[in-house]
Length: 607
Image 1 (cartoon, one colour):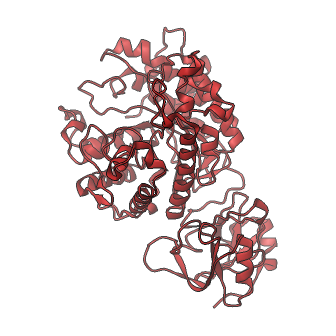
Image 2: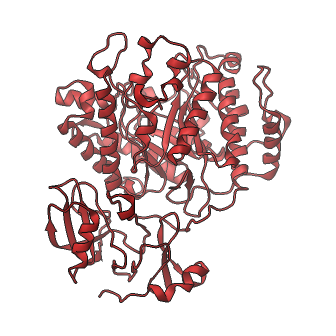
């Protein structure tokens, strides 16, 4: 249950690294203010360095990792505690999400695949799926939806997961790093992306690609090259870093094509490559390792470059002082602050998706002296950034351990631990009440974001980006008039469309036959919920040049590229906010500047 406001809500640590006086006061005030209101409604989108929900409220979160929930839901004994009496008749999955919802842990991060210890692969071989695992994952997603806790789902894993990177390589009879380059393996992974997005939940009946309880997809957990700096081979060469970059670009673009409404990130730790100019931020450099032991810069990650991809919505990092042999709070603090600075330059939100600290024995005093100072530092840093426009938008501790009556392992945080009661929960309460005071995000248009996005790979001056709401171009498909190859730009494709009086829209694919332009007749609403995709591989664009017409059966019309207005049915206006979002709204709630321009925007409806 939510905690009260007594003096025991935050224990003062006798560690030389205690909660700051300002945050102690903030906790007391936040308790008095009451619990946080609903936030994070609908699909969350990105506007600059902020997450924004459908109500135009800024979304920041305190979250958690719980990597074995799929196995627990499927009844795998090694993922269940021996004593489940504290669940009080609930399943482990139900209890985890109930606790998270009650304590304002708004986002959980989960493996949407098997792992090395659970013995339950989601995919047993390419394209062959384990229905037991799938139904376990369905239950996790359904309970997340039921309790209003959002999810980050990882699509595969770099480590020894039974259907991770190595498994794909083993299926092809190749070395692990072939995962990033082999065309057959990449096609298997693209097929897996398509399968996951289109999976219809056996509990809720909702397609994963349509489920707003999913906050984001991680392409892969902690992508790395197979480089051993003590026995260097080709995996330690810069080419592997380039291969991972190309893989991120290809797979993020493909995922956005299949699922334009969910956020996408890398799921990486946040290391910097040798030639990045930022390798001094890496843990091995910070700890004064000799150059021949600079493993992080040879890991294959390159934080800024990896996240400077249009289809990657936010930057993600992890922090593991034990694994990285950088067991100082000073490193953790600098690590996060340096990534904040780079995320400002990228113009994207930043999330610390994993952080934790090992404790070698199940001992409360040891947790208090060894682990808790790192947790205090992380939450203090996060909360201090909430009101200053920082891109730091979420933190997730590793890991929420539901086994309250058993060994938590080195990293487990149980609800009986002081780490939970005295740090995690008060921090979440402070965050909730701080967010409640933030104003609505400017230039944000309220409303649900749905299935049509346009991405054009021309220079910015020739580019258009349309994200349409459910009443505009939701699940539409046009009948093709013609398809022409050798088209070099999307603008050239638009001109082909304009020259044909029957053309209502076009799809431009620069990755096919020197650039293929498919021009289409009036867009028709598709009865089945198969998503807004034309059957063209690669980038797809729903877009018209300035002054062109794009209509769907509900009569919405796109008439200019500017952030002005459009006319919809039933006395509504269709206009685009500065954030690039199109939506129909009643005339009386549309901005005055939009209503004033209404007559300038009228164009004939296309029958």
